Image 1: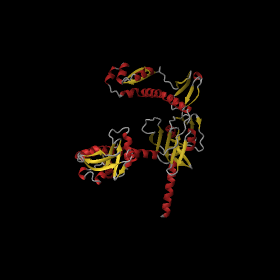
Image 2: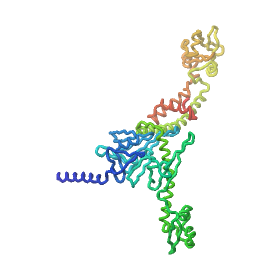
Image 3: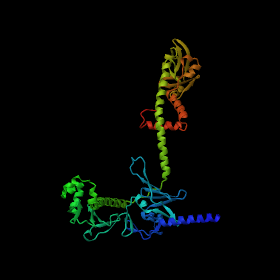
Image 4: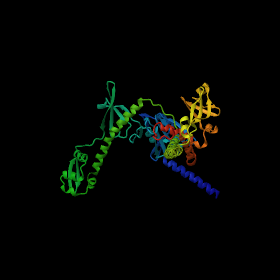
Length: 484
């Protein structure tokens, strides 16, 4: 039984190895050019399911990218200019981060994820990565030339010949077998510009007479005339009417493909290629401008941590926005309650410090009169003295900045106005309890209400932190002041 299990295990390993070998082919006959320079790989590239994988170290050096490896997560990080790529061994998901130079962008980096056709892998202690993805993620054009078995990364030029000897022939694009693209740098004073033109390597014979058959009848027209019909977007019936078949006007339009299909496809593909040619010129111009500027590769960043932190900050901001709306309602409630209490106690002393004017109104006509000596005062009702006190010159001056204790009564001074501690006046029986109902200041009521609210609804939120945050927000955006 053990022998059978062992044989089955060995058979499974052999099958897996055979399957891998059937998918993997050496790509040593494929030439790989980077901006026209052939790359000599220390280990041969491989082809898997029609995709070219190349040794990581060699291709990164050829492209000018920095490579970083994380053994724990099996993550490969490549950095070139303002682009950072992250791939994982045996994983089809790859992430590309591009640094954004716009200061008003919501994030300093733009992220895009790609599902690869073939995952990076290690083979014979060499890490292989998909060539096309690596190049295109760095904004480098990739083209395959089947005639020469060459993969070109990036556009490059070689000297033109013949009537194009003053031009440079653009190479490394996907239409090399069909068109020669030429570029020339024009200098006008201090201004430089790039001129473009192209040569069709397989031009269509527009004078060729083409014979078509429809409804048992034959019709002749030149390829030039046929292409004109296609360019004018004429439908099948109109074309046939122009060719002399008026009966076709009631025929189904899908017969167009049956009669003209081959020629229409030929014309359409040629037009598509010609419309695509300017893109290669644009790519080359941007590429050359970028290559003239030395860009320092960004330092590798832990984007998992960065985006986790961004997500945390967004969640925190959403929580603060929710709390803010609730605090605005609580603000109204506290204000209304404070006003109600103040209205109920209009004839009582409600504050910790009281001046002579308020004593006169709320303590049965108690007022403060000047005494007989300098800096001497007395409390009295009508003409009956209740209590007399004096202050030294030093005490009188100090009272402007801090309370001064005069025989158990704390006194403060505002200009020439004196204010007295309400509790001390009660202890001295200068005022009676019926005259007093000390109420908290609005700010104190507000702080107490917010603390209770946070402890009940959001115990994870720190009171001091949210207080400072809303104070900062009030300075710029929040119309309702939650904290004075």
